Image (cartoon, rainbow, N blue to C red; front, top):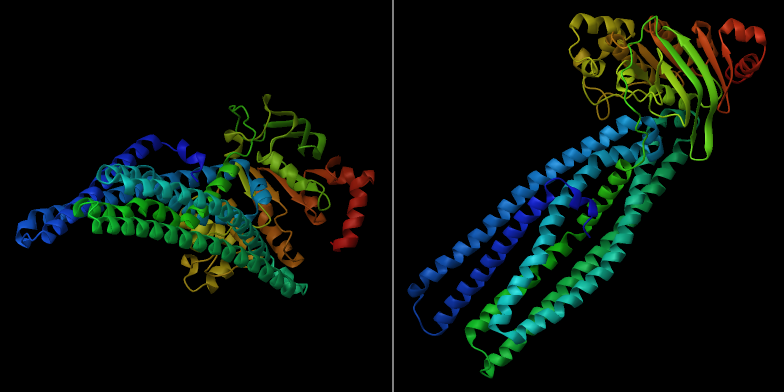
Length: 573
């Protein structure tokens, strides 16, 4: 039940040692409670006065209080430890996502990754807190109690020790069934998260094409699968809890009946009989506690496994080198660069020579490899083969801090954080002056939006707040880029793919000034951008079939010429 990854957590041995000490103290205080309570009842049964038992009564309450103090200290320790580990795990997960880039999110699904980073981490935190305490209690407390029971009455000890393995075996059987159900539930939850987020993102497009109802039914069916999986898991969990409660209650009843019969036949004294009877429920309590939270620990274990699988995904670890800043004199050379997923080639070998800051257009039909090339140029993907040189310095991948810290990236769907408009604009430049922000708002064409917002730049936007159109989100991304004057490399991956042509032309006027004195890689399938590009790469099924200036490619009447004719027919642009 314990994920092996827990045993690799920092300071886990120290934590386990402290928990073991707390469990031993708890067991001693439980035994003290039983001893003092049985002593008081026995003395009263023998005719002694209640006033004579005040010392034992006080001892009982001291043991009771100390037992709960230990529980408080243990929970406080585990709260802090679980919180720190969850914080570290979330940091590692986000760092992994940032290192690998958008390809990881595409593979895992946006909804799944969001759920994993938020709710999944919370489940792991709860899992660490629950599993460590409950397992340690189950490993120590019953056996110390059993030792005392054997000292008092070996026959009752035999009954308890025979029943305990049967309960454990029963728990294992139901545990495997619950694990299978929980796995199915978690898988259904991942599908629902991805499906819901994707449908929500494209709701406008689905509405336009009359597909919103079909996708609404699809989301309903997916949520029904999740509901059924959840209810199936809960049935197993409730069944296991009921069965465990039944067997433990029956076991305590058997011990009580046997003790009662022996008391009647004068086969045992009242004090040991009472002490054993009081200790018997405590003997089974750690197992019952474990069972009561079994479903929560399964959820946490599944979430931790999923997060660890992401963290352990292989990634290229390039040799880090010192690279120069991008200037008008910088020379970037790519030789025989290729990329593929496992045995499937995505980018076939190609060469590229760039001198200084230029605007490089990457054009091709959907699926031609434009986004893959952008990911290679950004360092999100590492080439399978080839050589990259920057001012003569060779690197095997552009996943280099000196390259990426100069880079601005504007994707198809810029992320809008649930913050104020000004915080979204200044997300990467939080120290920007008011004058610079106002200029960025003007250049990006956000003036009208700011004017219509109730609190202007202070208005909360993003999920759960004011919704934005695709064009407004793109303008915010442009404002972010405009504020950052230092970065000299600009990558754009179909940034206007979901905009109407009128909005795109308006945004184009705002984007072109941002491209000046920068090395720009612009992936698109819109032809009108190519007139402003200094160099064009034409992609077809993963191959760079042509490259050169617009005039050179148009004069050749080759692949670029045929592509332009085809795109004009398809897009009328």
